[in-house]
Image (cartoon, rainbow, N blue to C red; front, side, top):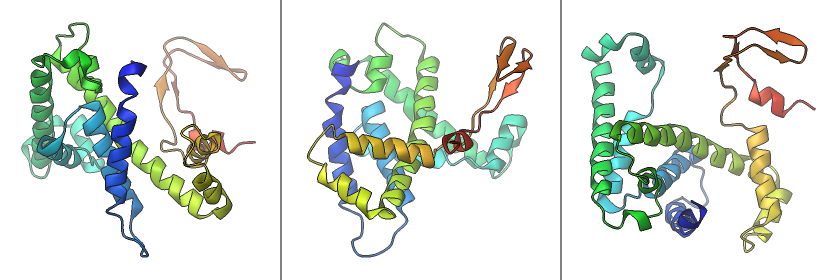
Amino acid sequence: HGDRVAPMVATMSDLAAREVSTWPVGQDFALLHRTQKLSMDFIVGIVLGVEGARAAQFGDAVRHAMPLDARDMSLWLWPGLGRYWPWRRTIANMDRADQILYDEIAARRRDPFRAQRADVLSMLLDGDQDDDELVRDELVTLLMTGHETTAVAIAWMFERLLRHPDALDRVLSGLDDPSDPYRDAVIKETLRLRPAIHNLMRRISKPLEVAGYHLPEGTILMPAIGALHTDE
């Protein structure tokens, strides 16, 4: 869907300029909170294609539903906790975000111009996808994996550049070039040194040999991304 997504670059640029214009000048501030706001704006506008007051409503609902800590995650093991405080609040926040998502899916299905829209939700509904729950799951996956990781990566990129003035000057000198290879290298180097996710788990479905080790079916593998990226 490259042709349909390309126009969203201008939208991202406008959202970024609007957000950065609110940042204080000449004083310290917590950057991660601001990049979290920016990445949420990207997702609401580009993934869902929601604007204006509706975008603010949805962004607020997702922000309340997403910060899951160890206490909240205990619901996965003991769903019955949802009847008690404070887990009731967690469930209520999730239900509110879900309802907004389902309302938006229904509204987009009725949109006669859906085929011309560039947002991801509209593209998910291409091909007469009639399973609302599946579409909801796809959207939540994008929200959960795209929001925090993007915010963390952007914040670390600033941290790295501010500690390396020569690299910062080189990035600034190439801002007028939309495909500056140095800027691309800076982003990749940030992700190498400061990976947003340090490990992930996969359970193998058949026997596998890795570096001379014979691993039986069902083995859980957990690559250490952070260690791998700094190993010569």
